[in-house]
Structure formats: C-alpha cells, structure tokens
Image (cartoon, rainbow, N blue to C red; front, side, top):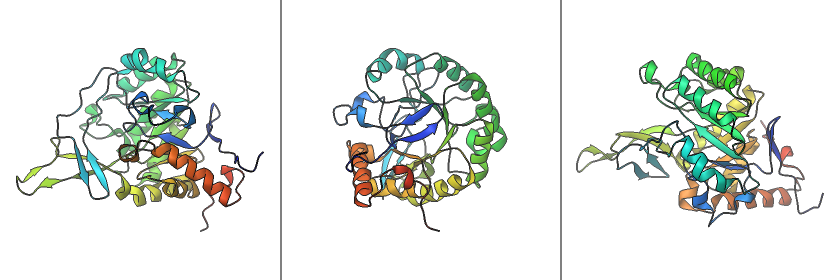
Length: 308
C-alpha cells in the first residue's frame, strides 16, 4: 500500500463492500443524475436515491421547505416518480458508474414494502434496499412503522423473506428508546442500520399566526440535529453487531469523522448537498487528509476508536 492511499473500503454486509464510507442520503441527492455535473459519481461509496413507492407520489402541497437556524424543515411528503419509472428512466444512467445504487423504499402497508422488495429482487442495477420505516402506517392509525417495535419487526421480517439483497433499515429518532428499535431491526433480519431520519418539528409565522409549512409539521435536518444523531449512532453501534450508518447534520469531514469514531461504518450526507453540491466529495477528501495526517493506514482503525 502506498503511503498516500489509505484503505477506505468498508463492509456493509457479506454481499456489499463499499470503496469508501461516503454515501448520499435519500431525498437529498435526487436520483443521482441531478448532481452529476458537480460530483463524479464514481467517487462515491454508494448512491442512495430518493425514496421510491410502488406508484408515483406528488407529495405534499407547498410551502414544504423552510429554513431554520442551523437547519431546515421539510414536508416534501416523499414525492417520487415511482419504482417503475425509476427503473425505466433513471437507473440506466446510474448503471454506467462503478458505484452501488441503493433504493430507499417506503409504503403505507406491509404489503407495499413486500411488493417493492419482490420487484427490486429481480433488478440487477439495484444493489441494496434501504427500508424507510418512518412512514405512517395506515392500518395502525397513523403510527409510524419505526416507532412500534412489534410493527417494525413484522415489516422488516416480511421484507427479509421477499429479498436476498442486502437490506439497510433506516430508523426514526422520534422514539423513546432507539436502541430497542435497533435491536428489533437486527433481530428481524436487517443487514445494517442507518440513522437518524429527521426530527419532527414546526415553524409558525407570527404575523399570519399560521404554520409556515402547508403540512403544519415537518422533518428537521441539518447541523441542529447532529448532536442527537451522534448520540444515537454511538448508542446503537454499541448495542448491535451489524454495521451502523450515521446520518444527521454531517456538513463537513470533521462531522463525518465524529460519526466514524463513535462506531459508524459509513455515513450519509444529506442537507449539506443543498448548501454545497460538492459536499460529498469534499467530505471524502477531508477524511483522506485526516487519515494521512494521523498516520492511519486503514479506515477500519478509526471506526469505533472513541476513547471512553
């Protein structure tokens, strides 16, 4: 190994090793092509595309994005073109790159998730499924799949039976005990866990006395949530034996390094992409510089190296 090329490979499952730990976060990088004029997609560890449903979804009415101190609130409502249109119109472009494509999926019922997994099982260009269980479960009275351990186990186990592809389960932070949910996901068949999704928030216009979002509430992301995300990743990484992927307020290499040090095997860059379209590559470069400066030959020596 050359001195100026530290090893950056990270393993997410026995079927997936990434060339480096920098991934995109679903919903913040479009379907990949939108950022291709700013980012060499071949350099990324993986591309996580915008969340996909069985049918196209127009999302929520505007206004649906509000800037906040140190972050943003969004109530996009999981707008997307649907799985079939993604496979026909977006996946051929992504397939030319040497970077795994991860399909983030969501459904309103467990059957929705199963059907999505069954369809993706036959698609060679999709390497991994990331399961968003932060969605309303219509049959459970509006409870999110990810907040109820029993429902979480049922949906993850059902997806596991429908696909042999690596499965990442993305957790919501809007729970009392994130470790319990994480252990449930691991037990149900997840190959890896990604966390955190957005924190539920709200903003009000004092002049009109109306919520600034048409949906009234939205998901808070950006630097404001990083301390919460870091704490949860640290807790979960200690509690499960499967890889953990850190998400939440990662704006630069220093932020990413914190997540790796507390035990994240990889990280996802989200809101930073809106501020700086080259954020992913800048973060990757910063991680490499840190490893060189600190004489770390293999990123595995950094992961989980926190001194407690």
